Every structure is written in C-alpha cells, then in structure tokens.
Length: 110
Image (cartoon, rainbow, N blue to C red; front, side, top):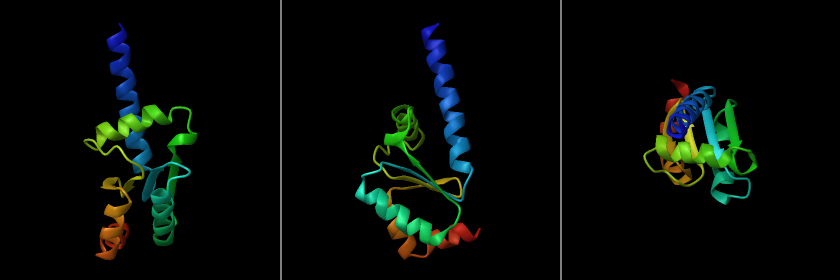
C-alpha cells in the first residue's frame, strides 16, 4: 500500500509540474537568495510579461517539487530551473547563452 501511495503521489506531482510549466510563457523555479536566480528573473522579466516564478524555498512542498524537477529534467538539480513555452531550457547560463543567440526571443515569439 505504501508503494502504491508513493506511486500516486509521484503521478500527482508529475501532473502538477506539467500544469505549472505549461501555464505561462516563462516559468522559473527559484530560490529567493540565489544570485543566478535573480539574474534569470531580471533577464526573462525583461523579455516577457508572462513570467511565473516559483520560489521553492518558500513553498511548503518545495523540496518535493524540486525532486520532481530533477526527475523531469534528467538530473538538473540546481536552481534556477527554467521553462520557455513549456520546454525545459536549463539554468541561468543556458538561458543567457540562448538569449545571446536570439533563441529565447524566437521561442517567445512562437
């Protein structure tokens, strides 16, 4: 019964993560005092008005959600974890590189 419960919990979290990442043009999972998270928020808020930020360290279930993010992204275990148009694009250095290539603006225009 316990394993069945855990399986259902993971399924619910997986559905919740998919719902969260698809609800806005840009979704950032962050920690309040993370300097790279701050840079990502500044950059992406300048590119889109449709940005959702989830501060994992301020959420009651933030640790569980962070584990779901790690699973869903094949091991991306740092913050920020960023989705653009429901597509995982990585952390700040990934987004910054894509932005410098004009690809973030292109993704947002689609």
